[in-house]
Image (cartoon, rainbow, N blue to C red; front, top):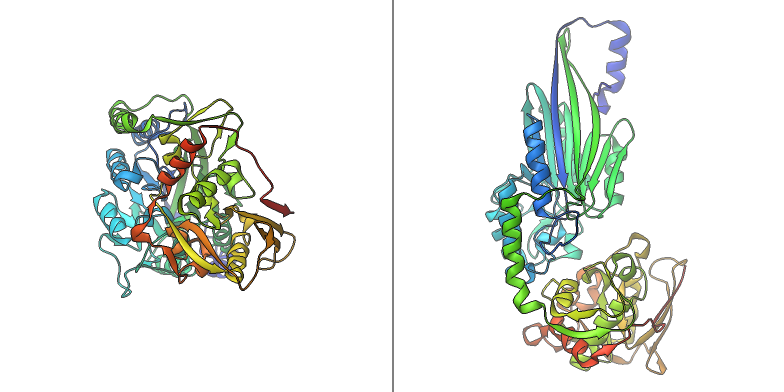
Length: 502
């Protein structure tokens, strides 16, 4: 298949009809992109994924391919258990052992604030790309570039980096400015074409809706993405979209065979091949895995302490905590409310991260709670009117269809919502205790400091009066640990605090 920028297609077609080109020389070029995304934890004890297996794949692919680009599409320094202690330093060390060729930050790179983001990116030994990321004054960040142009034996590949545009809502970039991925990407693609790029590759960390909009434009020949935690290969014959799930469960190779024909005019064409490499049962790179084991040993002594035992299933799966009442969501919200004595608690389902089911009879440890709540958030208490509580809940239910992390896990409330109605008008009933929510009554609300800053769209929290301020608050995970210890042996259950009509 031969590819020409879309704005030149008509002219190219006319030339083909009128003049049969004579090609004096033909060159074949091979190039492979290797993609991982959302690799953020070392405490992976399964037979699939992890840094050791990822390193094995990267080494094998580099040995087999003369021209290889190992790309990391963001979300690595957070959230993870050890990152709650060292703010992602160990993750950077491990990636430096594997040496990415390109790194594009995702939304979780900003979880610990701007200063930590700058520090971690400065420690990473890899080219950093983010065309839609700027300092407060509009300048490019030190160490970053918008794009790069690769000359692979005459095959010119323009590469654009696009950080997560929703990081301003989902994380804490503070003064950093993040523009829209689509607008920025299109402008950079045009500039790269004008500079002589034969192929445009966007390495991005954005949700699938934005990825598909970019693909539909036809201006990006290959999109390598993260964020959705899916294994995805979509190719319409014109533009390809690829994502590699998470935790290096898969490492996806995209093989490009380009043909350059020189003559009366230059033509470049290429074919794409896709190889999702499953790491299940794969051997682990000895050096990398040894360092992973050292990091896990640091955690074991302090964290493998039992604090409770469950007699029924406890569910923290991503799909559960982002779409409805979940037993882990209930446990976390109840612990937060009890710790500060609030009327109600609202926490975001996206802050619950272990994505697992604990079977009946399981012992719950400190490690389990810190794995579920790895962001280092503190448990604050704010004051809201009933009208503001309702606005917060409407935000929480506004993007259930997208699996958004803003979904509210609650305590002290019984909520009914109709998801067939338009976003912003979905909550049909709220009971607090035995009384209906009153728009003018004030309520004390336990929440986390990320949401307290307006994160995940909870803007109504940002200016709310503080009853427990951030600087006085305890670690959210510690409050939940205290709650679990107080329960001892308990049976997690759904109690109907969230009822949804779909």
